[in-house]
Amino acid sequence: MSKEIAIRTGESSPPLLFRQVSPGPSDSTLQFRLLHFWDARKNVKGGPGILLGIEMLMIDTEGTLAQGFIGQNRRNQYEKELHRGSIYTLTNYYASNSKVMYHVADQRLVICISHAFAMSKDEEDIDGILRERFRVRSFSEFEANCDLRGDLHDVVGHLKLVDGQALHQRPVLCTNDDSASRKVMVHLQLKDGPVMNVYLWDEAAESFRLKFDGSAATPTVLLVTTVNPKRLGGKLCLSSMSSSRVFFDEDVDPSKEYLAWLATNPSVTSLVNPVEVVKAETLTIGEIAAFIKHQPAQVAYFDCIATIDDVKLGTEWYYIACKDCQTKLNRGPTTLLCPKCGNENATAVANYRVELSVYDNDEQCTFIILGDAGKDLIGRKATELTDAYVQENDGDAAEIEVPLPQCFIDAIGQTKKFRIKVAHYNFTSTRLSLTATKVVSAAELPPKTSPLKTPPVTEVENTELAESSGGGASAIDDQKKAKRAKRSG
Image (cartoon, rainbow, N blue to C red; front, side, top):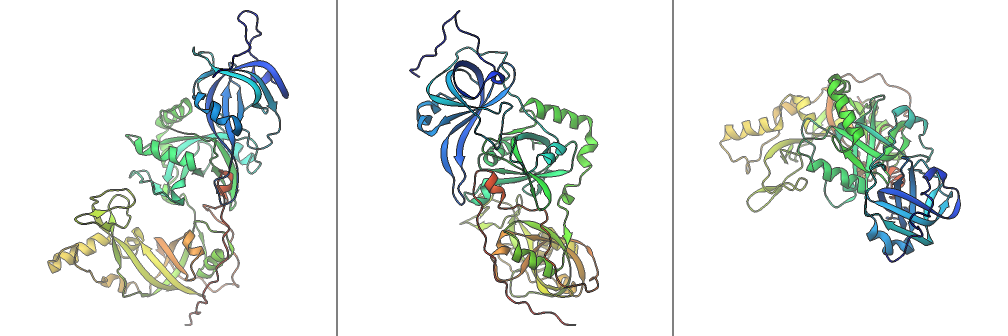
């Protein structure tokens, strides 16, 4: 930097504290540690947004946080001079009170770099200025500030699920270059409240993946900064913002303290069964169809009681999956390749994919039985059935085609409560084909009830979340559903 700071040794006034800053232009001096900086963007639906400049999070000797801003026209000149953790001295700035939403600091005024400013990086560190400060809040405080678009605070808790995967087997995270990879959804248990959905987007999602995959042991505690509390489907959720940062177990003091608290309260980790984190409402087939027709694209879970009418023949009832992540394997020249975890010599297992025709009192459709739902239904893993057939017929497991086991035919006529996952593709399909991820229990069809009602929104991964994270929500047109024949008898 070529600019000089207007400070004369022995004659200058001490730097102002952030709490002493008043609105408008000032030639006073500020001294602070730069904690974090990120791109400032104006949200544009369906696009990455318009780049406005750089936002900064700063802390002074008193421990007060303030937000700074460098406009896009000065970005190239000063971006390379910004280093997280360094001490800076600034004169000639403008303190703006125009920011009315999404405050990340204690000081409401934003320190804007004016045309006449002078800022330099101090060579000597100042121990009196904190290296980090967090604003962790409780469940009740997030609930009180839900949907207000005001202060963005930090959350800390212990992980229950990561992208729907429990932690007893290390989750495999999506790294594909697509829309799915720009989001990570975790279920986080707080000390004082229920399990919360925390949605991480873009840089926060990438930071989570890199740190998670780079950890020698599976992380337990997660701290996310500057999260936006939103209510979706009646449930309080937290969404990361462009200013958000991610920390694990031993990274920072609040996560260390939480980890130590867990060590002295081991029973806390078993208070909530991660398999039951997503509480599903029981709906009929018709109610699920109405949900898909009237609600925006999302992921939701329901329970549905239905009777098995038939097993679809002519399709394979299993697929060859990666043992680690259960993704369908691709056949290479000499080995099997996993497209999700990138393993070029993946260990293969058989996994269920059985199409059942089912019905309830009013409708019929297809349930696709995946993975553990098949074991729930017939009591055996797919690998056990394929291995037994191969041994009986002295064949090659990679080449032999295993016919549909009799146990699935024997299941025709049984009534079960199925756990149904509604996914984004269901909102664009003209065929009602629902994925069953679990057979909850044996059941009986309830008595016929009144005409169908539109179900309420339940726990979701809503596209609306992208708007609050700097991305854009896509408009989803209602899809015309093919008329389904009503079952008689």
